[in-house]
Amino acid sequence: MSIKILGAALAATLILAGCASHIPLTREQVGRISADTSATDLTAILGKATVAAEYDVDANGQSYHVRRLALKTGTRMEMTMVCSKTCIPVNTPVAVTTQYLLIQQLPSQKLLGWGTTEELSKSPDDKISSIMPKLKQVDAERQAAAKKS
Amino acid sequence: MIRTSLRTRLGALAVALLLSACAVPQIYHEQLQQLDKGMDQAEVAARLRIAPNAVYHPQADGRQFAIYRYLMNNGVQVNPYLVAFENGKLVYWGYLDEFRRQPDAALSKAAGAVSEAVLPVAPR
Image (cartoon, rainbow over all chains, first blue to last red; front, top):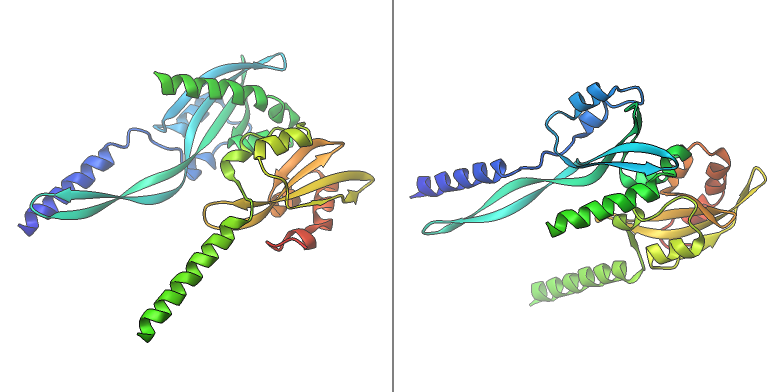
């Protein structure tokens, strides 16, 4: 009986872990990005991290390519009850994330900025901070559209 | 009997502490995403939806700043958080250490000048 419950708990844990369809970006990956990272290298650094949104924005007479990902900032435990004849709690680690943006100039694909929305909005580089109001507007529209669909 | 009384008292103390933490108006990280450089004070107040709990007017290198002090709740603890204006326009926002790290030396000095007043959770 006990083995059955443990087996069910293990199966549930594996299933829940497998359900993580969104792979977040890690600090280790972010740490490898620099201003002179090429477009190809950037894509390689992102690896299997899920790009939640990807779009072009026109601001200040220039076009930019934007990718939004989720940066993992921590982990919390999520409890699920697994029941057969008795119920036992199964704790599964769930990533805590924050939105992270990558901005490339077009058509050169030169990396202009990367960071959280807040970091980019208050960037000392006016070229970055000045496009953020437009970028946030476009991003919010896309998120609203994604929620509807 | 004594144990119950002690538990009750500790419980009441915990509730009182929790309530006192909630009583002070606070801002949250999500709100910061709505701020953009160049916003005027009214726009920032509208986005943050609360008034600052203190305002300072430090000068540095011949420049005059207005620094608004808020309390930021990051989900774990509450810390002082600063929002800086120059000529009525938003120039920077962050914790005091972020002000010290950003490259505008005058702004860094201005924030440093008010740091003693800013840092305690209860402003002087």
